[in-house]
Length: 154
Length: 361
Image 1: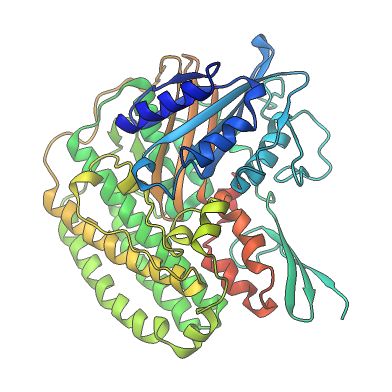
Image 2: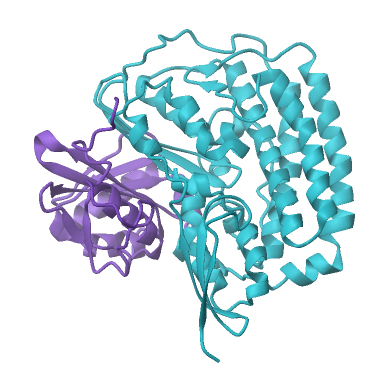
């Protein structure tokens, strides 16, 4: 847990408003206000060595009026922290879910952000290509992973 | 010469429904855009409507060549969420089955790679030899490919009598065959010509694109979830993570061949060390894990397979996210094909071991 504690300390010193938890072994979870981006992302990449995105996830919370977007980060170039998965979450308003794309920081985020865009209706500003990825090109319905999109017959 | 745009797919450019939009100038690829989604079935959405146990058959369907590998992380995630313990014997059985599945998946890859390169013997041999492992799987788990064998708290049933002997016979047979594969295919001058120096992914590009699995290890990075974050009994077993530095199609092929050998090594150790005891802990069949989120990852045949599950205390997951290796390897298509010859497209395509259903979910 040494490395996790170190990472926690470094982030807390640079970004005091971010909430950091160590939920289980090898996991660091971070809830950040939106205004820390992209500086926080660049810090995690350059100072802490989290060089790639393993997934970008959105979770819809209609009763709280939020879509929470989570980036899971890991490292290849720093072997001692390969066991760690760091998650950075941002809460976005459900009606106007938009944030800065982090593709310029982590090119590996490109397809993940595209998927989150079409599945949860999150707008990633400055993304190089936000066209539909998995959905049919004539899709006009709600983003399917929003909670108000219901499966028929279920 | 003017550019021509070609649609490769969506009908089976080799493995499944997936389209590659390729722009060529002469026979040089100037741009390649992957277009997945033809087999998207909304697995993540469907999972929100099913109980934790009911999700297992659903979640293994996208990757039938490696179905244990694809639900392994899910089962671990549910165990962690619900605080279940797993008997030691069950942990050994899971590692055993996951490794057998990896062998099966790599043999499948080798067969298709053979036919992609016009080597029909290499198509027939691994496909036939794979049956030895499939027979084993069928005896232990009941079906050929879709097992639904891993469950939270252990496995569905115990190993049948005489399984160890049959398993040893099968892996001894495979070891002999691997030598023959090496002689007829891996050392074949045509194979060497068509894979060496083709589709080079350098180490820093592999990190930048965030690729996983043999694609990553073929670029010289020894990252593997089984070593980086050992789960079940992987920390008690001896095995190596094969890496090759060149990052070309040849390196990626060697990684998979070496991984078959390492899996055989693991299978041997597991069969020797298999402890007696329960194969499954007694748990309620309808699980209601407490509120919380968990992110688990395992090393499936194609790379790191991860689940991010959020529970709200209901009997179904509130949100289930799959991070699959094929999806994470998608950016490599664009990157590797740009500037290469059109004739090398199939080689690069299959050297990534891309499985459309796994990417689309």
